[in-house]
Image (cartoon, rainbow, N blue to C red; front, side, top):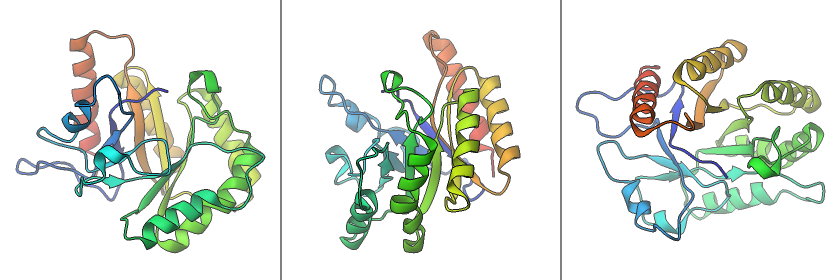
Length: 233
């Protein structure tokens, strides 16, 4: 399972100012390490700690149970043709009823990719069916829902187009979800293509990295990316 730091870049979110130390754009993809448990605290310290996180699941991480400044974002990672009812919806509603502040959910991790590389390998018809059962009803609770987080490859574009057709108007995400593994120029080009395709929707970048680079190049990629995304109004 791949995971990296996360930023969202939506029209409703503002960049950091010289006096601001937190931003609603800063999020964390939390995959705990049994070998390095102290990392859990490292992520929520520093100059600009994240204000929200997800963990590929529907339940919050025990490490952040008391972190009042970190909002949990549940994810419906995948689906099976054996699924019945609306278990994800039921879980989110139960958390809200118990006082949890859940304003957003994420859906279907890389459905156009195989399980071997971390994808949910999900057919568009099944994804449309599960969305209508588990995700679309959340909008009536005031929860904003993210589109499936496809890969940055052409297969991701194809999957989304086919999924929207299969939904036949029954799937209405509030924001698009972007994964990108490549250089800064490629990230900006990909984001430009996403915003041109869906100009009326916000964008969350929930996985991104420049793989195989040394420390200095990785730092440069991060600094360029974060400055650019912070500048989006």
